Length: 143
Image (cartoon, rainbow, N blue to C red; front, side):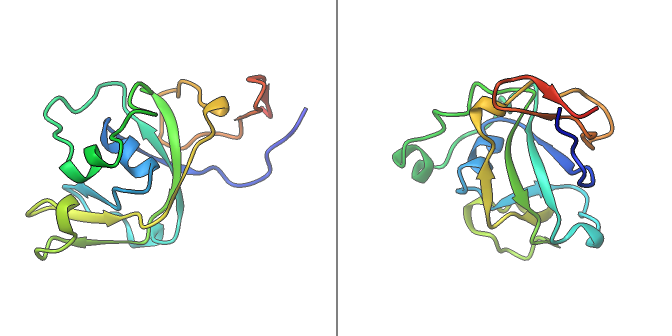
């Protein structure tokens, strides 16, 4: 049995197809109505795909031309990536095609896809996964 000794990571829930776009590294900005606390800048987050997709989502043509969101789109209620929050600022007409107007832009310049063999349905809760981790075999380890 393996015990996880690191501190719990924070998680950010994002609807599909946006969680997939962050996981692929193409979407570097997440729009929120609230600012991320400054203490979280530089922190690694688990990117959690919400149970319900964004029904109004329209993928930019650049994403569709590059192969679209065909890998993770069906993953819901699951961790799909790990990303580091680089900063958060209020809209100033910036952030290209991903930045919406009149909201806060949280920037995720780099992300790493969560291995598919480790993906499991997430439990709702505090947004902070506990000390349980998953081995590639699917068996739980830790407490």
